Image (cartoon, rainbow, N blue to C red; front, side):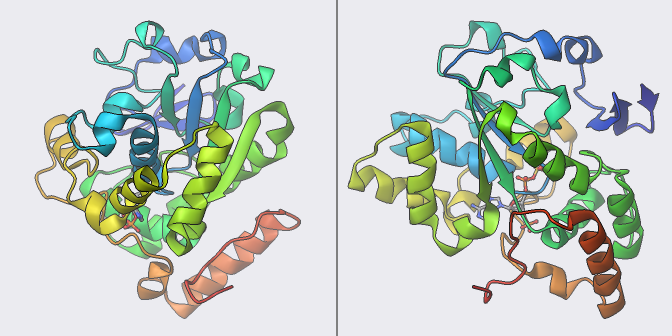
Length: 291
Ligand SMILES: Nc1ncnc2c1ncn2[C@@H]1O[C@H](COP(=O)(O)OS(=O)(=O)O)[C@@H](OP(=O)(O)O)[C@H]1O
């Protein structure tokens, strides 16, 4: 264990967010009892986590879809590694839905019976890094003032979530241990409805065409940004004392990294990416105009 600063905490080789951390719970993660119908969204930070919280809420809960319930998405799809008094996981009715940023080696061993479902959402790491850089100005995970400074920490894995390369490669290399489906952020941007059908198929959920229309519409960036149950404005304000609005839903685009990285930074990033991701089979979309 390593107490890095007031925001980061290293446990078993992985950086957690210190506020809200229950180290006693972390010690018991391996033995946490998994149910066969549990569903986990797994992400590296800034890869579409709260988007998928919204998507699962829309798929599973009529009242969320119909806008008659006002529970925040995080209450129905809570962060697994940051439980709080509102989220007694053992008492939750099935199917339980969870969000996690955990690396493959820290999740409960019960997930390895291949029954519970895992959706791993990934995004091109340059957009992840830029999204993270902007967010870190509000919430120091860690704090930096320039993209150069942040890029250094990101590429060394000294951020919440540790090294992006390790996270995605770890999960992918061990995918045969789990019932896991890899889904790409950029595919959802390109074809939200088609991607939503894939999610439903994996989850064994069938929605009517009308319900699917609503799900697709409410999961769109512009609509989600206005949805106080899903946009995290309240959570940032209440839990972290951050006053400004709309931090999590900043731009929601593909290729925004081009607005922040210099040619030299981009080339340096590419070299490190190629070295680390040689032979990695999943493809990435860096720009919306790519096929
Ligand atoms: N509906 C929808 N459509 C497209 N993009 C969306 C959507 N919802 C969230 N986002 C974008 O996801 C980025 C935040 O990532 P995370 O939710 O993983 O952040 S966190 O790990 O929970 O802190 C952040 O990306 P950036 O805008 O690039 O910063 C959000 O805007």
